Image (cartoon, rainbow, N blue to C red; front, side, top):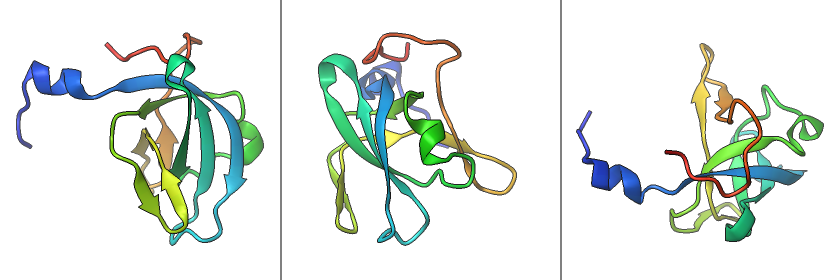
Amino acid sequence: MEPISWADFEKVELRVGTVVSVEDFPEARKPAYKLAIDFGEFGIKKSSAQITKHYTKEDLVGRQVVGVINFPTKQIGTFMSECLTTGFADENGDIVLTQPERKVPNGSKML
């Protein structure tokens, strides 16, 4: 692991957003959803997320998640992902979402 400075960490825009819509993403190589996430003053951003093992589409709408919103847009198949939805791998390698312990304003920065 390469150490980074505090200044490096401050460049990463880890922000909270609320999932406003979820679609299946059958074209993805690995099972995934297409998410639309409301990041408040930063707008609604799209993200591809491989989270189908632990979450249904209905589970996700209205849920707050943590995303990196200052990566360049990335093409994933036919989809343009505008942010990275963060999570941790469980013991089987399936993703568990990173989310705040209680509701906070959309767009809030991780400190």
